[in-house]
Length: 133
Length: 339
Image 1 (tube, rainbow over the protein chains, first blue to last red):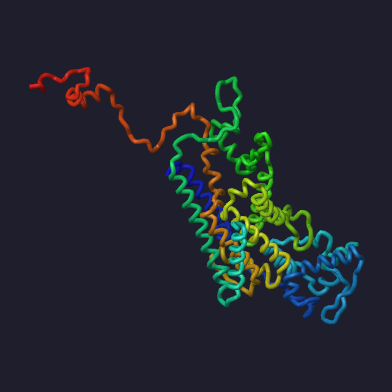
Image 2: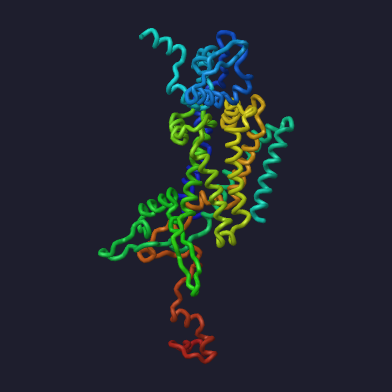
């Protein structure tokens, strides 16, 4: 083999690069697979079945956002026989009150950073704001 | 026909993964065994190919120069196009790998009435290649969020920039559009340009169709076919794969197995195909050699060892035969031998 001095280091770099996730995970503490917290209030039904919400909640939220903000249509949605005004804070977070344990647990695990919180407040933050005002 | 066959092959692969993953127990084959096998073929095969290349001697400096080589002091050297030091070669290689400079020089030849031939700069290949390769890079980096646990912050920044248009939810990525567009453009180039179409083979079309199918299956999984596509569940499997303890928690939709199977085929196909240019670009002697053919003597490494043989030595060896044959010699045979 010619040019061993460059070929062998090059191959070592290549193999290390390709197997990078292996080393990274071996030297970092793994997080546990997240489980979402069910509504603390004990509500059992969401606006759509759980499996569909799990897969498509972001699409639904996006449609609601467009509906409410762009079409001015804040119609009510029904879940478990109770009516809610369409919206993340008015509907979703009425039951799923804990953002950290409900939203963030999966989002952080899979590095999803939705832009909901650019504008929205979690119930606890909203309550704190009200007190200071 | 060549491209129709590529499509057929990819459709067959999709069907194998789709139907195969539905058989009970088979998800472990498609989700665990094949990815490991494919990665081992990819790593082993690539290393083997590079070692084979490194075993072939490069006897002469055969770099392609596109500018003034190093000469007398008052002649300005083009350091990038005719590098004479290691640092200049590194700079040239870096720009070749990062910006595809040699594709930038692509020309198109055409024959007009006369007949006369014209050569015209043609930058399309360069543009398409840039779109394709950088989109591919971005997608590979973004996929690290599924393999690294915890996810490093810089992957989040990368995703943010890639999806900066914030179109829809889940967000559309520039690189998704770029990869699909890149595949279509490169494929279209092979169909539309007459000369390129003539020299294109099955093994030019197949990787393009395969990568296109990988991209489309990924996009379908992210945006459209969301049944049983639970990212937490999938990440549990992918992190399991790279920490050598894979588990498939809940059922995962067939589109996931199709996507993974196509990627496995791509990985396993890499070392045996033109896709090896990812390593070959580093080993191309026309780029990675110094333009010093006048400053340094290059010897062919496989030259046989030939010792100098002077005429006097030659005559010493063959004098008797020369005298016998009547060939004049400089030094006569010694009289002692005549007796």
